[in-house]
Amino acid sequence: MKLVKIIWEDSVGNNGGWMNRAHAEDMCPHIHTSIGYVIRDEPEEKFITIAATLGNAGADGPGEYLDGVVCIPRSAILDTEVISG
Image (cartoon, rainbow, N blue to C red; front, side, top):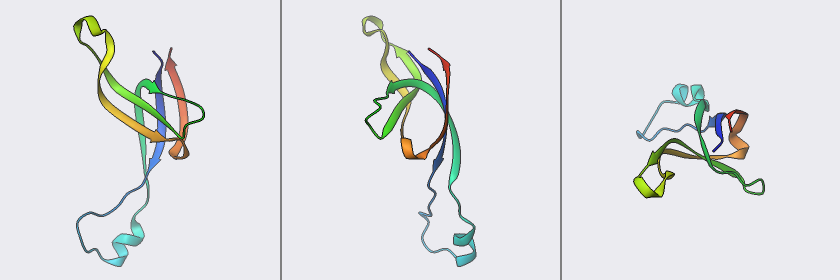
């Protein structure tokens, strides 16, 4: 299974109610780095899905149980690096 590092840009918002204009003007998107195993990556789709952890649940084998799953829109991806696989 392919392991990748993805650097991506995410929107930011305020869920706390009212804010002053100066704070709103200072807001900017956040840059994130995610490392995970590729779960879904179809070129015709507008996203890639990765999981940070693959669980091994007996007969099901590794990868049937996942944790730290994130689905990242391709339009938000700034850089991708294949670590292994």
